[in-house]
Amino acid sequence: MNKGPNFYLAIVIATVSIIALLLAIFSSNSTKTMKNGTPEAAVQQYLQRINDGKNEEAATYFSKTNKCTVDDIDRAYLDTNAQVILDKSVITSSDSAIVYVSIQRNSGPLLADTYTEPQTFRLNRENGIWKIAGIPWPLYYCGGEPK
Figure 1: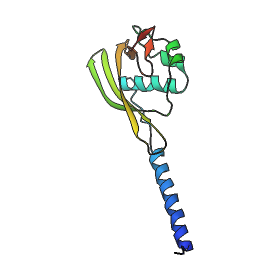
Figure 2: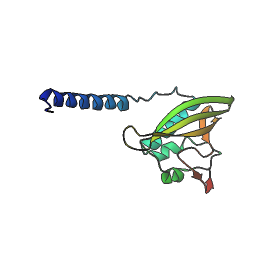
Figure 3: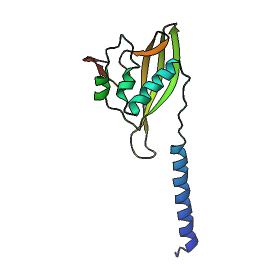
Figure 4: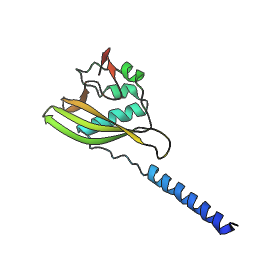
């Protein structure tokens, strides 16, 4: 069977269309900026500082009761391709809150399965500012103690 130029043109057009669709899907992710002064914003700003390599600034988001330091952040591994999605936030009292997020990572190229890891951030309000308590992601050890 002889395949004419229209057959090959159709293959090229289909391939270009699929690539354009994939680019549209993967580039449509946008970041919503959380309202300042909220627990969600504190978590977002902490993670953004780490992502930007500003570990000393990220450490300023730790509660005074937190054993984590900038050295712990320096040792942590951060997958810069991971997406952090806010699941929900609960203010449990006037001075404490919990922010639940999902960390999504692709387990392979393009359309591979996505791996989702739930994480919890506990926050305390100190002098009117939300600060992160406990061992927050992406840390798993702080001050020699495991999460």
